[in-house]
Image 1 (tube, rainbow, N blue to C red):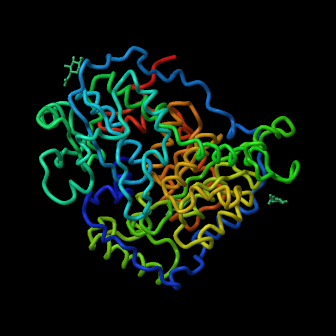
Image 2 (cartoon, rainbow, N blue to C red):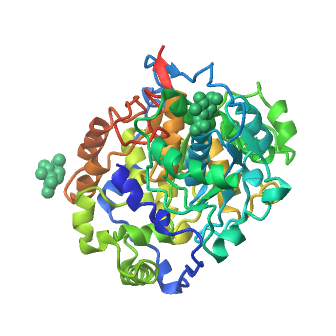
Image 3 (cartoon, helix red, strand yellow):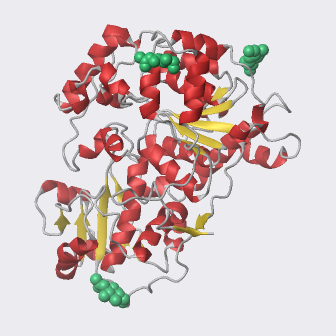
Length: 500
Ligand SMILES: *[C@@H]1O[C@H](CO)[C@@H](O)[C@H](O)[C@H]1NC(C)=O
Ligand SMILES: *[C@@H]1O[C@H](CO)[C@@H](O)[C@H](O)[C@H]1NC(C)=O
Ligand SMILES: *[C@@H]1O[C@H](CO)[C@@H](O)[C@H](O)[C@H]1NC(C)=O
């Protein structure tokens, strides 16, 4: 699992402060061929599948109580009399990697008795989003929730204003901590960063992603991390308002009551009570070129697509993609390929979701465009996304901003009856962890089962369905305890949850 998620997050290998020479090779027209169905016999049957019991079936029922509840320390170690200095971190990666980095930064500030400077979010080379912390997260809420745990400042005081990204980018600096090992211990910080704080009054750690261990930390530090990720980090009001509007439109679809008003705030309060709320599934589909190329799998787009992805791999990773040593069939039989939109559609159909299911597609850019999701749309005609549910005026503040778009999807994902992801990446792990904390249903595709099933060209729809249902019985959100080395953000129990 953790190896897969690393494989699927190639961006964590890009170092901070390297010049961004990562321009995407331009997409040629020919790689956008309409992909052929790779599973035509299954697809034909799936399209004719009968309706189940609709939203009354067990499939949609909330998770039963599993005997665990959120558990965060109510009494914290008090704020130290004096701060040891300012802690600055620079965070790369996408939204979810940055969220984890923020939580780790709070924990490290606590370990060091330092004052945390609101983390700097790097511009991501692939997604090109220059949003700051305050553009995405409610900074006053963040500071307020953590006020009894650590000191936080929005900006450095005048005397330290020289400590900027530009300052560290141009020369070796004594206040920069550059070699924090991956998953460093609390002691490592006490031995290596505390002296910098003591000498200079400030330490800037970069890179900082994945730089704090998940094991052998005091429970108060673990619970502080959970408090940050599940409580202190909330999105700015305009992102939450748009998210609420999308959720409301999924629950109360238009056409079943009066025409949709563009004033979503009023609409949210007006229409409740007229209609029974509908249930919906959020499907996270990360299927961008970066990931398609990195997986080295064949996605059915023919020769042009294969060449385009190989060229992309060469340009970005100079052939250092481990998976490309294997054939597509080898990768698939081991369940190492992200599910295609068609495959995730077949999986949902086999699990029992019928064509009346409301599906919200949480996705940034689908490699190959609308053609790649046409099969999924055929299976689930009531599929929606940000664009189909909200006008461009409503989306103007998030337009073109990858992190804000992801934040809206995250928010809708946290308000859905069911969440499922087509590939085990950072977004998947983040939602799995957060929904575990709140005991919400989350389906985890059994990649090891699905790989061989999809390779089996003689399997019938009913055999496929039976194998899928059996192979997912324990994958609907049943709580799994964290094992050593696993992330506390994906597995919040037992560190941040206790027996109810
Ligand atoms: C932080 O403060 C606490 C409480 O004041 C103290 O016990 C601890 O030794 C301090 N740690 C560091 C690294 O200064
Ligand atoms: C679902 O499928 C049934 C028959 O298989 C069809 O009658 C119905 O119109 C479909 N519903 C939608 C929303 O496409
Ligand atoms: C394909 O599935 C069928 C039905 O489950 C099974 O009998 C057969 O052995 C499978 N073939 C392979 C190559 O796994």
